[in-house]
Length: 382
Image 1 (cartoon, helix red, strand yellow):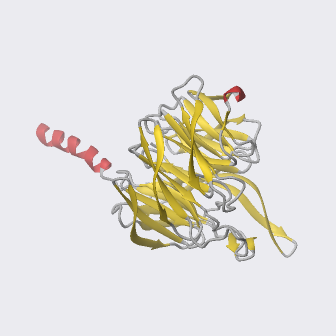
Image 2: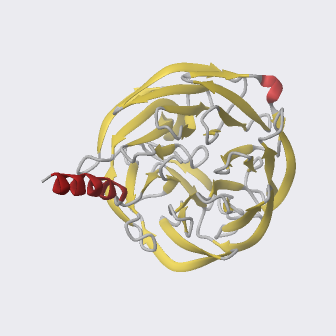
């Protein structure tokens, strides 16, 4: 009997580890990019999709929840806790009637989703700062940070089981679009898009402090950023003032230096908005808008965006190649084994699947049609 119980105890963890990986995707169905330019529509039709990666080559939607979210911000306004238990989704803007149409105003809500429920369900919606945008969950799964653009602040949230609560709101003086934890959880990096700088937050338990003297100048309109798994490099995507046909860069920060500093700028193309580093740290992908959000009469307009594969080796970041993406690509995420790349095409309403082969990013031809416009895409914190 003792041997049977021991065998069962050894087997149970493997069942947990065999749980299929998931992604969260925000579907914004109230902002439309049309031939004449963007148009705000009525609220109430947004959703969040849960995507299974049980077969990483063929992702599938397993659930959708009717929850407000927004494409107005970097496509990192949602994330799954490391244990896969909860999903956090920020609602950045809300549309309200104005004249004969609708106008967008800052929201202040964050949705907490129980991903272990069958089907997944909303646990609660809490209040955070004004216009919550990019967010990040610490690897330990006990703390989250939310970048509040209109609030010019970062919300600090504790996570205890299924209970998520804001415990502080840290002023950072300027508009801030995105935030990412360092792997050891003692620092976080913020994209201060309005002043074109990356800032540093110090994290001691649940106490988060900001020192403006550590701000680093990066590229125009820095909007998104990620960190390598070893914590040595932070890579910031400089989107610019819009998708205007001109080349932009990603900036490379050496996080091992005291103080941290920018050590390189790498040209990638027009408006890298979606950006993510692979779990194995060997590659990153910058998703280029490349004119897809521009009015169709603009000289810079194109119908398809692109994905740039970056090679990360020895602290150096270099362009390895580029491949066509779909119509107005936004969010990007990797499979847990870093072999597959998923890109959501907002205007195209599709999820494309790519595969990394060596230092080449290849389109597998697999396309998942979506029940809305994919505004954001993220997997578990790592």
